Image (cartoon, rainbow, N blue to C red; front, side, top):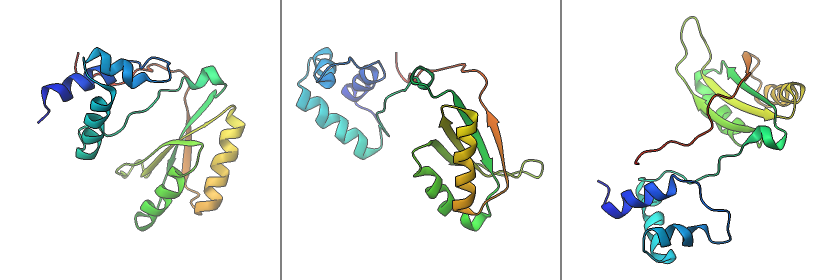
Length: 155
């Protein structure tokens, strides 16, 4: 169960952090706390699993990454963990996860591949095929970005 201070920390951390040398000092001030005390709580919450990660949201189209491909793979079950780890380690892959396959949809591994152009995505996916020896896949390109916000757990 979360404590009141942990809930308040989550409320603060789900907001955009200020662009400053010490963003956690700003958050600590909002909580009437010291930066060291805040960081102690955050570390504890990460270790206990209350918080899984803290990360930046990149507006990828603003930095020239205009091609985004969800590549779905049909990987033999006995190789899915190894192939997933291999793909997840690639810098062009931002998401890599397993899903249950179905009779009419045999794909069980999903990767998001990002590049400046579709051709570059295809070059990366071709390299992924060669490195994994998995050739059963489909590429589904993003055509429109509908949402770019983080989850809000508490208001």
